[in-house]
Length: 143
Image 1 (cartoon, rainbow, N blue to C red):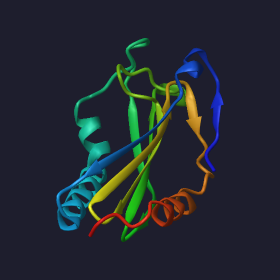
Image 2 (cartoon, one colour):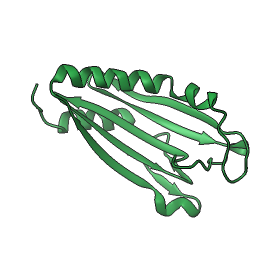
Image 3 (cartoon, one colour):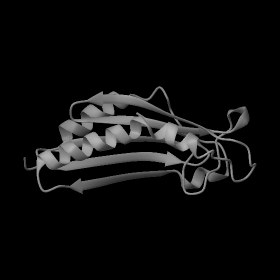
Image 4 (cartoon, rainbow, N blue to C red):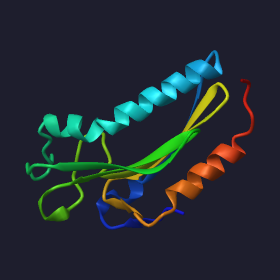
């Protein structure tokens, strides 16, 4: 379970989303899932190379992206952006905290995301159990 704790003015914009991406074949979905996995592996370094700064304070931001679950059918990552003093960062169009899961069933990839500014994703939440539940409950899409 993931818990959000509202700690500031952005609390009303905490979001949850589920997206489903349909591919022509299960092989195409598998290739797409592997590409997403590779992109996440280098995402923090790519963000840091841009030299991000907090739009409110102008201070430098540190991005950390951590894989929180992994299986043959999917994976999950936690993303955290902090400014000096470990305060949640204020970035345009990007939340300071998010947890995202990706799972594939046949020719479909499902993404579930929890995120929000001024919110903290519980780092003790069981991302692996959530990923397992997603992969078993998605059903068996065409192969």
